[in-house]
Amino acid sequence: MNDFPDELHPDTLAIRAGTLRTEFGEHSDAMYLTSSFCVGSAEEAALKFTNQMPGYIYSRFSNPTVTAFEQRLAALEGAERAIATASGMSAILALGMAHLKAGDHVVASSGLFGATIQLFNAYFVKFGVQISYASPTDPAAWAAAIRPNTRLFFLETPSNPLTEVADIAALAEIAHAHGALLAVDNCFCTPILQQPLKLGADLVVHSATKYLDGQGRVLGGAVAGSTALVEPVYLFLRTAGPSLSPFNAWVLLKGMETLPLRMRAHCDNALKLAQWLQAQPQVARVYYPGLPSHPQYALAQRQQRGGGGIVSFEVHGGREAAWRVVDAVQLMSRTANLGDVRTTITHPASTTHGRITPEARAAAGITEGLIRLSVGLEHDEDLIADLRRGLA
Image (cartoon, rainbow, N blue to C red):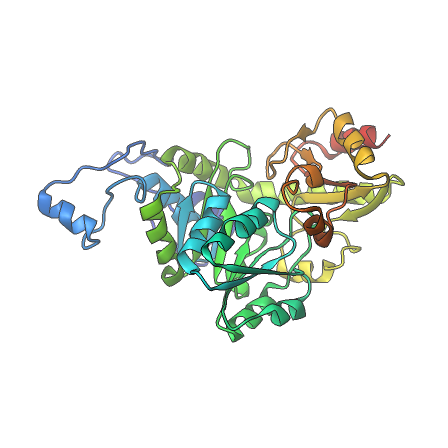
């Protein structure tokens, strides 16, 4: 693997970091589709299995293509190490299994992805982990939720789907003062727009399925941070096996080469759509961190390098009106995935957050009239025309 100096620009790291070249001198990243790796002797096998000799053993926990993806993401996040997983949800599972035990307490953001809330409430609690929720925009609420057994703060910023922006530095200070870790899901911003570790977070989680790939092709996830904190995640992955496949890692490496360019374009398009939506009489409210009307606009300006590609808006008329908008568009893809070059549209209350209780949705501010857009890279005028059709 190539080591690069820290001063390289993220645009360069997205292309060059983690590049592996063998004796064949391949210019592009190689794909190692093999389940296992041979050794030269019994002694070499013993040394590798006991971590006394570097090298690859079995692709459940060691594969050159996956390592290249991990090193590229770590370089972009400013992390000592990253570990790849099969999906974003398996990354959160691996983090929890590595750093939590029965009797521990977690303070989580009330503005989390529905599947993350389901993982916490339906599965982590089965193993004796206690969960409390606090508003992502109210650091005092997080401080008040702390118990003697609090071990982890977990949040998304911006949140899904209301794009609430949490003050990472403030929450890191509160967590560390009480001996807890802060983990941040950086899916919406990616390291191009935000680097939580540099703001005080201990661990960063990714659904690489989203912007890191950028074209809706494969699933993947990752956990990044210090070597000391990522090593337990690796040990869980080695044993339990929610691993990233080499093929998916190779696709993600190709996607990350254009990540800086795509994120800037996503931001430009999203801002134009948010500004247009704000002027429409059928729209009650627009949620986008790049708008001065956003409650955390000033914080987003300090903490992020752009507003991101997610725009949510609430229409008058509740679910019936929202579904009419979703059903009327002709260009946008009706799917709950996000981070794609293709714009997607969904109704969170009946899709991404449909499995959580109505009370939990209400607490998170997810109304029946809410629509979430993941703004892609089509021409902005075509996207506006499609939304105009839906709002007509």
